[in-house]
Image 1 (cartoon, rainbow, N blue to C red):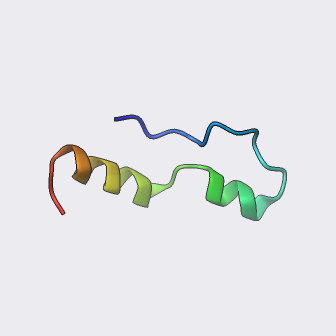
Image 2 (image 1 turned 135 degrees about the vertical axis):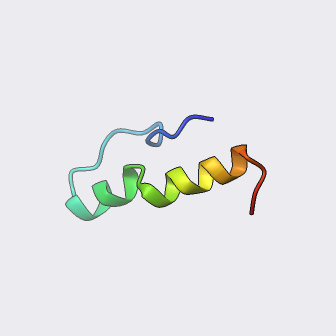
Amino acid sequence: KRITTADTPAPYSPVLLEEWLPNANDVVKAVKEVLYKK
């Protein structure tokens, strides 16, 4: 499982950029999916 940005051009707005980039919650969610935990 890879945690990457969306396959779109990077936004210029700082608010949109914050949402576009992977964050800690995305990492935790992906790890739980890989480990089959909820």
